[in-house]
Image (cartoon, rainbow, N blue to C red):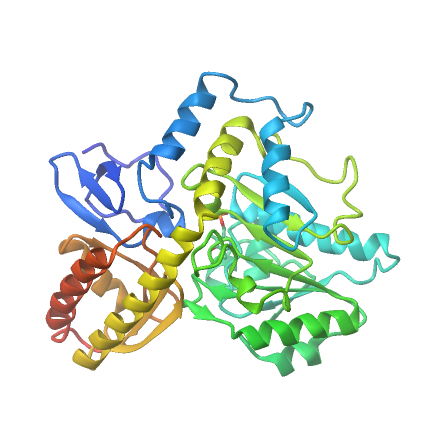
Length: 400
Ligand SMILES: *Cc1c(COP(=O)(O)O)cnc(C)c1O
């Protein structure tokens, strides 16, 4: 195993090293097989080594890698058209990551207020437990003290409010407010879904006060909840003005996008924003192939079917292991279990049993399996979790 001495110590990877992936499985050098229920943190929605994505990437690799946005990237124009046809949006800016997509979304919202004659409206109302990325602006938007510590003064212009508290949002609106930023389903913050009615109410509030509604669907988008974007469960009654996507939209190739209405994007004229790599030919080729797969109604039907099955099975696990599992939460195939034992230790135990899961805030075991999973894959995972929870009974109770 190579030593890790020259890598920043920001990550704590386990000993297992994966060299190959196929569908919902990852393999180590010596052939050990793991069931992947975290999928690169909701990125490999189509599983590993998907033939359509591999085909798109290898074909493009032999043609053209990079142009910069000095020149037209044909696939960028085509993919933006597809995104807009499938969503509320009229305009798209392509990025390389989720954090950059959120940055673009926040800039778009402020700029919209600016060009509409309200430069004093720059504040963005955000939620506790939110996660929007690791850049300066996005750690300030997220407001997680752990991610802000030691990085200098906090940026002005963000108000971090209790999660899902409509009254708090209403009371925080002032003549400085530009926008409200929400994750329809918080991933990192503990796999917490906002009710559809809440999104509708916030939409109405934004309309009433001339605010922009920004969604961060970096994790909840890309078909994860059984619709292309989670807010689409509101049937067009809670559409945002601006939205950040990434993760699963690239199927494992780094890419993201900021989607906006014509009005919201009106201020984003030549020279206001840019990216060297964003929307490059390789990313666009893979993301186009991923988009076509993700918008296949059969895949979405599978997500909804499996998500129901998985939720039922997890609720049964909760009944069978009341000393370990406190609740089951989330939406679609973004499912969490709040645990009474330390979720990090339980995740490691699952890993030792060759099931890969993640963690989230609020002591949650987080699962975001590839959207292509079958009921049999879920049965296998449940059998492993049954064993893991049985073993976890002897652990000390989690105490914060
Ligand atoms: C992962 C994530 C981000 C950041 O994406 P990166 O690609 O890591 O920059 C932003 N918002 C949400 C909701 C995420 O889950």
